[in-house]
Image 1 (cartoon, rainbow, N blue to C red):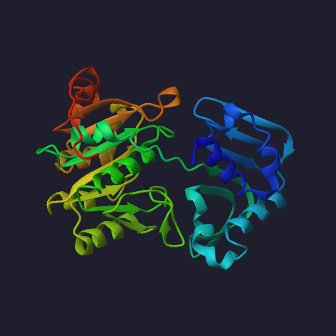
Image 2: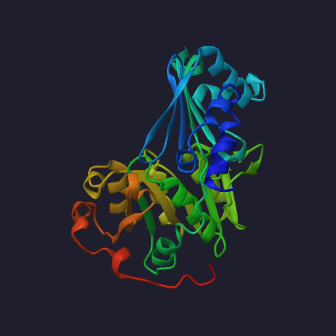
Length: 318
């Protein structure tokens, strides 16, 4: 399925808006990454560098509710957890996030009512995008772990997904997919290709998923997206012979030097390689790859020691 087909596939998940989305110019459809719906506002299609407003169509609250019901196969009860969390993985690997009014019980959000906006993120598999980065990191003898860093919409998850696919051809790989964004499991089947030797812990909280993967699946590599407060559990994996392939939100190496989780993982020795991605027109492109030993060295990485630009290896068997 090419990029344009994926856009129309995602549009079919929004029945009240499908007709207007089919009028979007081809150049927008082939580069679209998000469809944004807001009650009382126009339909917007986002690309990495452009915003297209669908003139003449305004979203209504009733239409947004109709979309949510469609996402759930008209069984809201079956999607209770996803509805409370404000996110849902859909057929084809597309992902919906939504906002509205929180229903709070016992100090926790138990549901979201009066849906006011939906962001449908269009699934994107770019096979081969991680080949060079993997060839420079995965089989290095000194690799403890790799952190893929980048700002929002820099294709961190897309790169991580392809890394998992390539890696699982050679090694036992476990993916902790807390947000359902890497494998995009729908009714038990991964909608994205993660290879033949990959175990997916879908929707598990990272701390629980990490523990289960290490204890029960014996991974050689553990992959996890958007690391944060669970960095201590991840650091413990390094002492058990598990190599980590992770991602984190950081727009620059200087930002990474101020990120508590990133610094803790590097200082513990659980991570010793960092790759930085670009965004906008450079989405999915690796700006640099560095070997780091201490967190205080991260901020100066941009000035030299770029392994991505000056090293090359052949990825055998890819």
